[in-house]
Length: 397
Image (tube, rainbow, N blue to C red; front, side, top):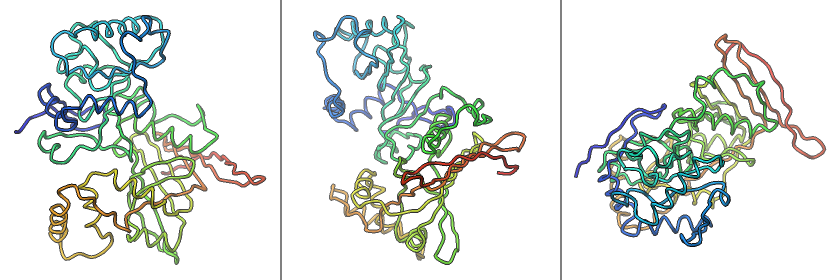
């Protein structure tokens, strides 16, 4: 079966596919099976989200909840909503019409909406956030809230091809990606000076800029150039995707037998450069690098699609190969070998690195070319790490 899905360019994310009601039902059946709704329930229960019966739910929900998640998956219902769903929808509509500050989050399709045409009556749910699953449905085009995300990143390649789905890349290991309008657009961000608010902690400053880049819909917002050097100072750079960042450092995945892996084994000093040209911003991070734990490497390896796991077995980075066809042949052989669900062994060379920062530099470009630079340097004061902040300008970037 070939199904044509609609695709448009939206807020910097190109060619996103939108599904019809028939396609959505087919996709849901393929990905979750006949027990799909039960699976979603188990996912929520694993997050300790309590389930209440209609009888146990208070009449005035405005006094009981700060955030209300609508996850009844509207396309499972045909025609007008049946009891008790109709009453629940009206109670939420009444809540959003009141002066209460409760935030409404809808999963996949706001309850009561038509899967293709949205809120036909104009009096239904108007969520603050919409989280589409697998691929957005046609009704998502009528969503005008400030936050629209896509969740469900691991869709098998065969299904992507079957439905001709065009979906955005997910940043790092994030389970979702923003696909709707950010509450703050690029035009209002790209010439901001630091004086509005400079974070005392560079990790907070970086996180804020990364979120700005992702919210603005910039492509590959988590991509960074990592620069390494051999023990005698010969440098090299290449692009990687940031997998995670926290107070312990910046993590990306790599092949330990690659050139960068060999460099790091000789010289642990490295630098990361993030370039968000759509915002006239750069962030540079310098520090020392070490391998992540084998447990972390295994967790990431087995979280990836099977196709990526096989590719890791085939790829021998930085080595000379006879031709491209050799790789394809080896890939096909392994694909046949592991087709029936046999666990794919993680290569010893597949792992990751963590850069522990000693210096951060943030550069905000200006139309005048008198750019603004903020530098954080780690200092040891009485046995405690403190960050010294210096501000400066530069005429080039």
